[in-house]
Image (cartoon, rainbow over all chains, first blue to last red; front, side):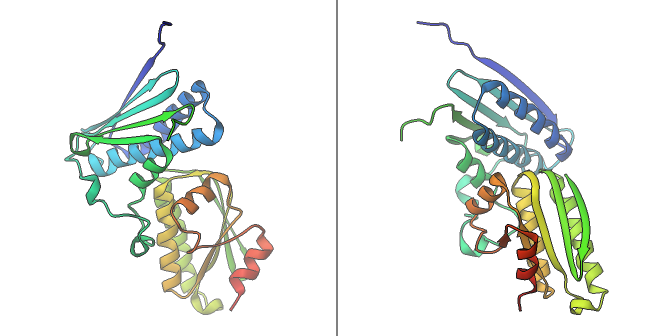
Length: 142
Length: 121
């Protein structure tokens, strides 16, 4: 059995929305290194930015004393991203469906939907203060 | 993100370039709000803003950017104006399709079509 190669990269950001640009640069480089197809890179990039915005803005409420932490686990067959904030959390089921006709013209509320649409799996832990997202290099069997 | 503002007759065109992520949404909304106010003080179009957002050089947009577009659409409609999208690229178009907003926005692939579309009674 061959040795598994797995790299872990951790990024800890003070909760300023300006740091979304830094997050974008870091994830772009990671995705290039992992060799995902270009359209898949765009999907993962979007999901990470949405998760970062969720952690910084909605979780930590842009309190600079609170950190949003991103752990990227670069495995051979997948990328695992764990995002943690220091907020009070939320209940996924209580977030309104942005595709509901009555919500279509709302200016916010699409972030979680887009994360789930772009990644192979998204799970919520610790009252939603930890979000784990996974994208496989090859799509997993349905 | 960079925004270049130009006018063609009574139509305002914003050529947007780069990635619309994070704080860029607020900047984009602020530019559009300024144009709504500027149009309000002009007599042509009855003070309404007719706006084309040229997205040809937008590489990526997040949900905040999408929110800015939706909020601008609502403001401009309320004031009796029109906003249309021009030259949606692959990832931005996918985003708008995923969010089921193709039914809200009129989208065009050429500036001439967009101008004709926005002037439609």
